[in-house]
Image (cartoon, rainbow, N blue to C red; front, top):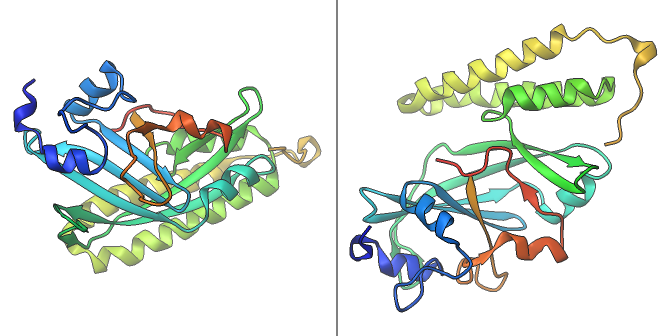
Length: 244
């Protein structure tokens, strides 16, 4: 694929390519090919997340900026004790100038996550309430912990109410919101159908290209891979790899 058509200035801005137009050495050949084929690069910085995706036949860089309701470092640490729930809300950024964002297109962007610590690997795994709904419900149900199941059900109900409120607010995407609502409602029904034997309950202990981000300049050093975070905090593993 010819690099001449790529939005080189934008890619350089975020450290995805170098001044000589070569890709960052932190991206291997497989990462690069996936990115060129529509997969998303993700950069995390505690309460912030940014995603980068090539669009319009790889001539434009779509950047989405997200903000967490909790600090990622705290979420990862607390996940070792119990499942953590966190929300990401964001706006779509389209185009850049010398200061960063040239145009912001406000809209409905919302993701709810669950962070579950895996004792075997010593890592925390991030699950999306919509994309990983069935898997997430199964994991929590298998813990056979009534308190945890009720916590999860409460989060599902809050998400359902939130989505219901957004249908009237964003009629242009009501169809998509209804799809998410159906997924959430199905998981609520599944949780309600779980029959737990109180005597057997015991309190449970509880693809994307990941890039690290420099605190002083949120995206300037986005060419560093997420695995550099491992010395400071547990790495988040996405259960479905790269995201389209």
